[in-house]
Every structure is written in C-alpha cells, then in structure tokens.
Length: 270
Image (cartoon, rainbow, N blue to C red):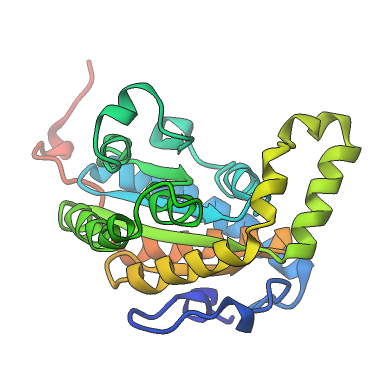
C-alpha cells in the first residue's frame, strides 16, 4: 500500500509552488472504493489510538486545518473524526478576534486552546490566519507580519518540546471547485446559511491567498510540525489522506498504556 504521508509532506526548506500540484489528484490511492474502505479502517484504528493517548495522559496531538474558503475544513472534521470519543477531542474554530482576544497578543487565544495531555485537538483555522488574511488584507504592516513566521515556529517548537505533536493540513482546492461549492450552497436551501457574500470579495484575491499560503507553508514546515498539502477537490481522498496521516502520526508516537503499581494477581473481590 502506498503511504500517502510521504507523498504529501512538505519537506522543511523546500520551495512550495501550488501551481505544480493538481488539487484533483489522488496520490497513493487511485480507487474511490478502496479509499473509502481504507478510511473506515483508519477510523477504527484512530479510535483505538485515541483511547491509548487518553490512557497514557502524557502527550497530545494537535491537527491544524487551513484552506481557502470552501476548502472542506468542516467536512473533514465531521468525516474523519466521526469515530472518536468526544470526551477526548477538542475542536476550536478561530474567527476574527473579538473581545478579550483583541486585548492580547495574536497567539494568546491559540495557546489557550492547545489540547490537554491525553487529548486530540483540532484547529479549524488557526494562528496562521495572522500570516494569511492579515497579510493579504494588509491588516498589519508587512514588517510585523514577516516577524510572525519566526514567532510561530518558536511557538510550535515549544509545544512540541512540551509533549504536543503538531500536524498541519492545507486543504487545496481549485478555483473552479470553489465556484462549484459556492453555487451548491446557493442551490441547496439547507446550505444557504453557509454562503457569505464576503466570500466573493475574498475570491477576487485568490492569487494573493495562494502566494500567502505558499510562503507560510515554506517558512513553517518543520520536522516537529510539518505541513501537508492535501489535494482536496475529491472529498473522499481528502478524508482518506487526513485520516491516514493522523493515524501514522499517532502510531509513530509509540503510545503506551500506563503501568499500575498494584499486583493485580492479589486483588480479590468479596
């Protein structure tokens, strides 16, 4: 079986050119039925490893989901994490900073949401918004934004050193695919609520966002916190790829059930 992870990881220090990646490609799995079967097996194994992570209670896993509007972040969370125990998962969606968030540095709200040891944490958008939309929309001076890549790398290194394994996914769809998904939201009354007129303004800045993503991924894919570029036009492949990378990451953590001090052979129940 082809290992998807090795095909999609962004090697630290490498140049990223999204124009060279086909968002409809399915590296490592050409057959949809096979992909769906693999996804189901992955979900079952993820549930086992999540239990072991919780039992061990010494480390955590943080999965960061980023993507252009309609890239499929919500769908990925719903499909890939469906078999996990909600008690051991935290999902945080980062919107425009508001209230108390605006009274702290930009990493404050992100650090506060880092999963506790024993948990899997999912970020729907993340601290990377501060080098993406902030850069594209000129919300902060460019010299301020440029310093943030180092801030982020140091922040993620600190989390890694403290026991949090980080994996980051860029869900990459084409501009045509985004158009189809927006149109579907307009056609389906049950999905109308997901359409935001402001998304059309963001769509006009497509090339700027692509450039911003390329830069962020180049500067911040590190051995302790790698980026994976997920071709996401095909939803079944997107789900398979994310599940397989999460699964292999947890397997590599060599999770252990904790040992207890008591001699179980001597325990008797009256």
